[in-house]
Image (cartoon, rainbow, N blue to C red):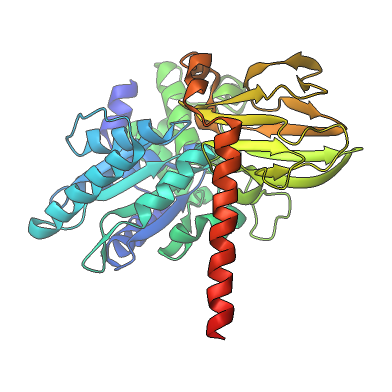
Length: 417
């Protein structure tokens, strides 16, 4: 029965409007639009129809972005375009998509990416999506993009981190439920598609209002009602007391519309973890400093030559070092006088995990790791990797050289003035 129901595409008014909207998006030079609505709004059928039409003149990738990590997401896009590469580097994958897009632009229209479940994507993958949205060739965007979500997080789209998406956004379309009359017409058409010759004999007029209330006007719910009715075989017509049997709570989706001014909706800045490890340094319960670890090695200590200066009598001049290695973060104590602690345990070296708390003197340092620093990646880190780092003398010498260079530059500038 499921196969029969899906084989007959029954379009309803909001779907027709959405189809026109998406065609307009793909014809626009910016070529990026947002479609949103609950799972039972018929978005999947709509996507199938628009993809089928666009494939006549361009390559189309339909990808479910739910919980995909950056490399897996880009590999899925390339696979839809016909490339089974399994490349590991995000930069390599983006470059491959860029090359593919430029090639297609010479003979066909720019390829299309239809990305489902935008609101279920990992923050790190959203960041890669922004990079993908920026790819251009001859002042034209490489890929046209349709973003599909269960809800429209307006404040997320407006977040500064999503600027590459926002500047391309042609518009958004919210799927609407059917009216009472439209619901009855849709349900009748669905029953006919499922082999019911006379739907009017199955659904008396006195229960049509109740069916609309039960379905909330969403086609996906009406599809399931139709399946339940047909499963009753010849026990027709349907009676009001039968609706309790027809309705199954597990088959119905709720849709909480998020208004544009809903202050409870988080900004992407609130939920996106930094791509690099992040330190939150506090003293006596007060946050005094936040640091993003962009370098391969970060020296912690009281000395002004340290990357992160912690002025405290219990902190050594060169107290500890953080080393980024193979997708993980390693902490090394540098034979400090008062020791280095992780989660209240003294350590000489420690592979760190997100939310670990480092204690140095009277200071507490919370470690925040991005999704790419998952626990599975820590297995490949060996402490022998840390032998690659500079010695403390090397670090001190490098910093002195840098300070000397800056002094010379300032001196030359003052002479010119």
